[in-house]
Image (tube, rainbow, N blue to C red; front, side, top):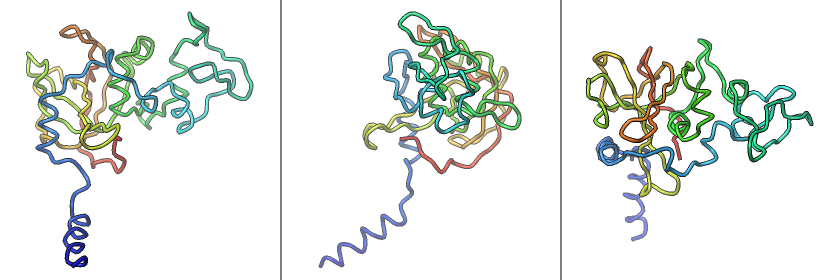
Length: 220
């Protein structure tokens, strides 16, 4: 009897797609308008985090991660501000985030979303060339001229039940080029931040949208 029960369960586990359905994602997108300045900021998605330093090139002598942790015993070069924290600068961004061969900062969509909630980070990122990989859908949040899409990734902190899409606006400046709804794309452009409907909104001013494969690593 146990074997009879295990066979269909095992078969289902081996053949089921390890992802949310498009219908589930779209339903979540319709109900998700998240304010980065009010959302809890997970450390793992903080551009300033020590983890970011560990996974990219190490800071040069004299640079340090947030919180004043020194590298190779050198004193932090960034000027201190109120509270003793060093000011976040372009040099810090260069240290923590890798660039592509074309010179774009390679930043996850989750980090781009949460950067809107950090005054210093968004000040440094504003106008910088970036690239990220995400799914795209029609923008129904704030798109009066029909020139935007929304790029999103699913974010899960605990389990599938609490998963939600995290998204940013993608501004074409004209009618968007033909695209596949829910398709995966590499998005290249410059970052902008605007207050829209009372919310600080991260906007990617698009230069190039290239069809891409779904990343192997899922956001959890």
